[in-house]
Image (cartoon, rainbow, N blue to C red; front, side):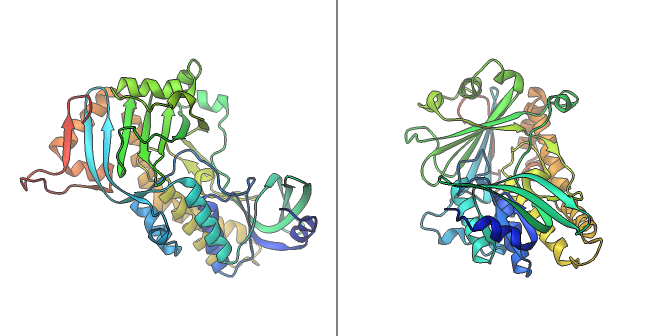
Length: 403
């Protein structure tokens, strides 16, 4: 519940940093800054965690970043499910891979754990807070955040003052004009979580169903629900409902869809692939707000957490009392961020483009069978362990249907 005194308390404090958005990147950077003796406020427009599209796969990089934050997922009452296998299925064949050091965990639980870690570090957290506008007061060199705080009983307005602002609010919308000018039109993200105990998907198995107009990822969560995350062309959604678009991907790859797919509550994301400036005079951007590549390899959370580490590290290198502190932090952040992620972004972007071309994707699968080392170029977390005869890797290619 929001108290009537809270707007005055928020407005009377000058924060070193206000983090807008309590997703993985926002909570992680807030916790790291607080550890560095910064006075940090973390706000989110919602109260508590909620269902989000995708992001339930934890890559080796994500697990390493969580360990650095002292987040012990294995100690949870219901630990994440280790991911052991991945299947890429098209109408013409299937590519099966082994996976190592990967896990799956629902976003609601992951976000809640990271918020708790930030609060444990000393971060002030306030849910139900919408930031309507951010201004730069050049006289005081402070950022003024015009906020609206809502609770079931009350709604208040407050002006929050801070030396810096970090935008971790997620993926912003892309204008139609910008979308039309893209060489490869970005896809729309849609997804749902279903309770289906009889659907043929064992825990620890990630399935990617690929059609010319989109693809769909399937994985079973730790609560036994099936997480469905798809990226589809906008033209499909203009004449199909979300569940029908996903059902067509199932049909194209000769898979039977979950029983209750037609009644699932789908959520959506705007155009997926995009780039944003990492900083300007108003704010820094981290996580999806900093840029996004279509989610095909399960590495998004790892990138978000790594970006949070790079931004917090840039803060540690610069004295906030310097007149040019905002610029110097931004330059260091940009340099570290792109050094850490550029190669992964390019690899994933090329992969998503290959998926759109059936012939190119079929060629990729066949070459991967003949040259297994290529798999490591595309999927660094894939494993190539000897099979029962001790000669061939755990990498197979079937000619259609179920692998």
